[in-house]
Length: 327
Image (cartoon, rainbow, N blue to C red):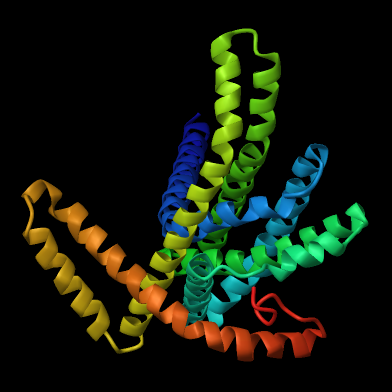
């Protein structure tokens, strides 16, 4: 009997450790996932464009194909690469974060530049010339998965830098939870977004009450505005996250002066308002400064991206890139 009780005690202790580990993984995943918010918002804002122009019946299958490619990117390629880097080359994390931050600043600044100085989108012109819907779908899905790979790499690197796990398996489990959670959040949201106008149209035509039909018409009219707001929020988030990564990266590499200046300005702004608002004002000031710096840095990168990096990628792959064509 005493042996059975001892065994039950051991099982209870193991269960307690396992439960604690699950809680630790969930907490670490939540903390790491929150650091990737800016990239997630932009990912959700960018992805709906890949289903524009297709029949409604093909929208969800296309999103499902992109989501599967995203899971493959994160779980099969990026997660093992991140763990190997953390174990054998942790010094690479900050430079890779800054490389990803540069990409975010460049993309965000290019969107701002396009809004201020509109120009023809040659990707859309190329799509219009494609007559075969199946071929166009393959090109769109392939392009979306490639774009997802870049954003997923940034998400996984940001998450890896934020994880304070005591061992390798905790790192792996946390990264897996973050990767799957982000994919579900992004593509679940995208699925809802792209089908809302169809739901609204059905309600407008088949609603049994005046309120239901009015709601349907509101959804149909409101979706373009929602997509526009998402695009603006996503662009702002890219610049904020990208700028923040660059500022923190410089500090980690031994050049903390920019980080210190922003910190002092944010503290002064926080002290200038009532105590209850000081934290929010300090955070907003920091985010604004990071975003402005991200925009300035991204604008400086546009000539580099369009005239050097784009042609180099095109030369290696044998294809002209969007950056090379002025997109």
